[in-house]
Amino acid sequence: MTKSVPVRCPSCRRERRYLPPRYPCACGAAVTLSLPRESSPVSVRHRTWAASWTELTCHACGRVGHWPQAEFDCSCGVTVRLAAGAAETDPARATAGERGPFRPLTIRTAHDAVACAAQFLRWLGFADVRAAAPRPRAGVDLRGPAVVGLVNAATEPTVAEDVETLWLHSLVEPTTAVAFSLAGFDRGARAKADALRLPLFVLDLTGTPQPVNDAADALVRRGTREA
Image (tube, rainbow, N blue to C red):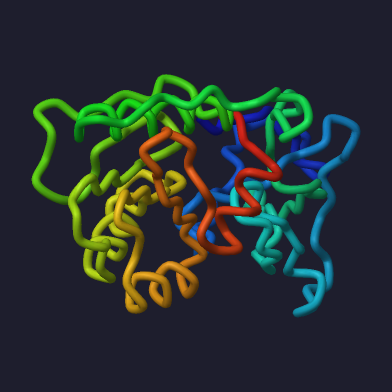
């Protein structure tokens, strides 16, 4: 969860609590501006288009985006800008080399598939991942503070509508959406997921999720831990 920080106006010296903005990446994750402790707020005297934007990289999918600078209007009439750092991530975020090997969970039932996907998300670094109870007919099978997951244990491939529904769930409270499927994904689902930068994984009966698209490869490579 984003925490407010104390900021003192450089003009009137009044202090206020400032909540860094969160921006929605196309992959569904939230990108939060980090404010370096050593940075000092400045008064904006001459506003330019280029200086009003900052470049941030989404920690979930690796997409680089341009977002508005962190700034606010003080009650004294001055616009205050805070020098933003990179997108906020947990310095303890595990990478593939630091996590160690994933321990597969043999899949015999639909419940096993959900449990395997939950275990895989926890291995990636998502905390408190739990199966939805009761299990919904469609939408979200797994939830955590920073992730929602779809687990299709049916014998038919996952379709685009399921991918889009999962992505919409991730927008309610900005989270990373991840889809798992035993029978894979049809062409429409692949195209929709690629457009949304939503990670897709195929589950085999040995319980080893395999990345299907670039977003999934990036998620495995980078891992993530919630702040």
